[in-house]
Length: 367
Ligand code: ATP
Image (cartoon, rainbow, N blue to C red; front, side, top):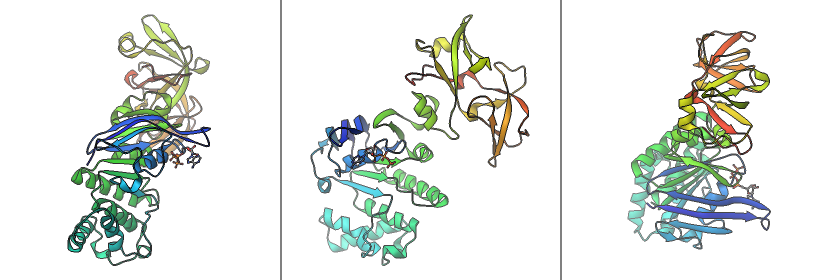
């Protein structure tokens, strides 16, 4: 296993007109499982391909296990990659697929190689498929083989490129748990790319969020969820997405008042909270952010209660999503036994500790 250092890594295409990865720096600890997430085109795959040695960086450095590998050819890096489309050799059996990488990279005897493949196949629950060809396997089985082929080589670093995207939802959940189990057992160092924020949040020791080729935030999933550095991260992480409302910010005695569009509501942040959290408020335009799960249906007299109407009730089993008439899209996620109908007047509330305040120009979270 190995520590990985990515220093000011950059990739430009089309003679600089496309900056796919913009001076990205990351430290990945030995045995750490890092998920990289972001919308389509944010530079996830390009980053991964540079780590694998499949794409030449325009600038910056990559170190794996203390060795500068920036100019080292892919086949000479001790890295295994697991792809979305499995990338198995169609004419080779499962055994041959798994043994192939081993044959290339080690000097084991035939018997040792066979023992290692069989042991890994048992761990992956594919021992009874060793004589099958890939086209005889289901999608889930193919992905197990692809994982087994990566694991059997015992590389320094695992790179996963959306490995579960081709599987149905149920199988994805199973394989997600499987990869986590392997990670715990083998303590592999891994970079796992996905566009699925749920996957990134549940699998990563650390989550790295990219947008437009740039690092937006990295940290423990819970920290990123609770303290998004900007509106992009706030909106990207969490489902349903964080609610956003444009607000004006005005002092109200020693408190700070957030005033909704057309004076629809006024929300007071206490002096103690503002002192503790707010950076200097320099801008004049802000966006209030609050997560649907932090919005409750409240009594009229509750502190900072906001009166509104219900547009749509979306039942999702254990919860109901109440779409409210507050801004373009404002959702409260409430227990399914809260019985309300479209058109009902309702009073909602949320705690000030759940309020995020984003500078409307820079997007920065100022609370
Ligand atoms: P997706 O989730 O859609 O795969 P991604 O986050 O993996 O997206 P990349 O594939 O890394 O994004 O692409 C980042 C940017 O670089 C995009 O704007 C893409 O169009 C551009 N790009 C990628 N490969 C090339 C290439 N070979 N030539 C020119 N532009 C490229």
